[in-house]
Length: 455
Ligand code: UDX
Ligand code: ADP
Image (cartoon, rainbow, N blue to C red; front, side, top):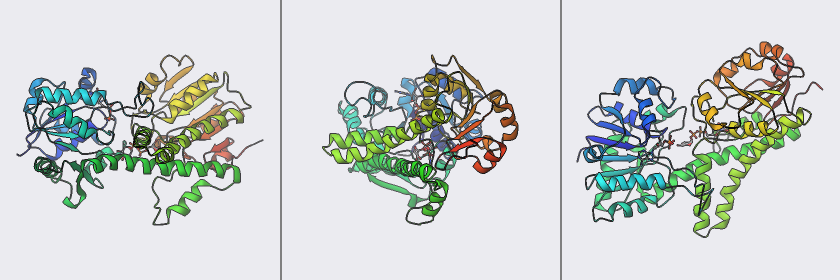
């Protein structure tokens, strides 16, 4: 079989960019990107895409209406598809068994039932969402219960938001997990042929389904663990006078360690890290491995600690009260170049400061709409703006939570002069040169370095 028509279920941060890239690279393949959320589909068909991702707009504009279509799926779309990618959301369960730890598979199961009802027998099902190990097996059971066979592949997504289009264009690897029978191998060959249009063959790795699923969780757990490890050292640096930046540089030059993911910060965010680690921890516990479960869980606990430590510093340095004080929050997205705020440390930090009765001015170039949703109901004392200078007017403190490039280019002398004195700067991303900021007049608290105080 040669794939001619693809249906993707889920037009989110994974489904949207991934399908746009496939449509761009495979002009002879028709790609339907489906979502149950009509509003999201309308946005994909408008000039204001629901996902901000550098390079995405151009590709969507080039392919949309040609071989790339954003739709609410109907029976017809399922029937036409040779291959169905499932990129629906799999959040951490908030209720019942495994609440707060296990993945909530209700959307996946709904998607599988739609497939079972309408898709042609033999349609290749590609699991793209991050799901717990053995989901493909469970999905196979749901799909194949009527005696119809659908090969189910696991093809985890490794793109990082903000660099999604580059990651898709030039992936470190593409992983395809398949069942070890004839049909599974053929299906994997079909998906491999699709990627091979632009990805070198040696980068396309075929594994069994379980290895593929567990590789995704493990990759995210390792990356997050690096961040938690360096963050734990940042706390020690602040006490001792060592600089976490110098330590990162020193250890990163060891080729066995490598330089990436050693940026100390207010904490990691994003839809994957926490969810995947909790998932890994839950799975390990379920399989009777409490020590393994505990080991990975501590990575999340360290991240929670880092965020709370940061809030405590904001409070204690401002004489233990921020009630009625205006605080500028620079950045709400969980990282730069995305409008995604899922699990962003900004949510936690802002909620805590609002509990302490602070007044916030939140500045973000892309994520203000999402910030409003995240703080809905508690944002009586919040203003949202793209103008950092207006926000700084009469403020007591600046708090940097996202290292947007734009924030590095602001005129901090101008900002300082607009602020109340003493003016405080809490840099949760080590974005600014602390010596320079101190010279301007700020009291500077930068993650992983001894504070520079005027008093
Ligand atoms: C991650 C994985 O990188 C990607 O492969 C997977 O497909 C999805 O999860 P993403 O969450 O989009 O991607 O972003 P990533 O760049 O990994 O950053 C995650 C969080 O860690 C961000 O909040 C980021 O600011 C933080 N981080 C990252 C640090 O605090 N320090 C670092 O050194 C690196
Ligand atoms: P991710 O970051 O994994 O892409 P998102 O939450 O951004 O997660 O996107 C997942 C999308 O999947 C949502 O837009 C949601 O409406 C959609 N979705 C959930 N269940 C289904 C389904 N059964 N069919 C189609 N779309 C679905």
